[in-house]
Length: 271
Image 1 (cartoon, rainbow, N blue to C red):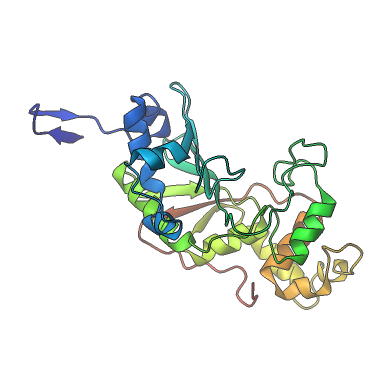
Image 2 (spheres, one colour):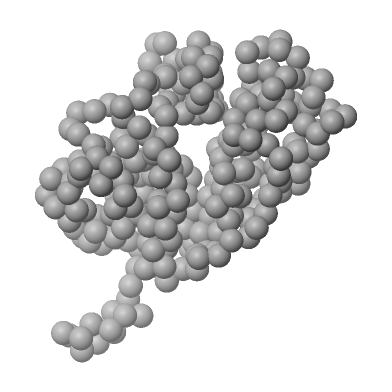
């Protein structure tokens, strides 16, 4: 509960995506804009979140009656990709679950790993794969699913996101790492596993000396380089290429606001 001093009564503060989506549009935009780090605005010379110019660059999908929200922030009108994309939803217990969070560098080359040559969606390579685009992205130093280089602003983004989570009255939130490298990065920012830690430990053992995955790093495809054993990014490409014999799925992580779980399933790899 929050106290409204002007009206002299308690008012209910929304605590879920579903309850926020029932609010008037101006209130929804204000609440969801809290996830935007000021460092991102500064990077591109953008005005504060409450300015009309920024609001024209900030697009939402948050219909009343739904329990998820998609947001896209562009650095300039008509640019094809947002500098920030987020897709949030509610868990069964009313916690916030991050399905996807992307920071794109618009000044870097684009690789069409998210679409086939005919324009159909690949769901970032999880549904089908544009192999030519993926090979180009791999050679350019990108990780699976990246259409552009990242902005290296995850640390301030997490700080802003945790302020948003706290403003809803929560102390914990969940994320869905789409790829292996996402999970390792989240570990290093203090996340723990709700599901998938055993899978991550099996992967680490598989790439260790004598592990069952090493023999599969045979160069049979561009994504199965022998160097992948010691690289988070290259491991992720090999896993994306099917080296596990199964998709990288059923991994869910969580973080307590302001706290680090101190978990490391990949202690010796470089990026």
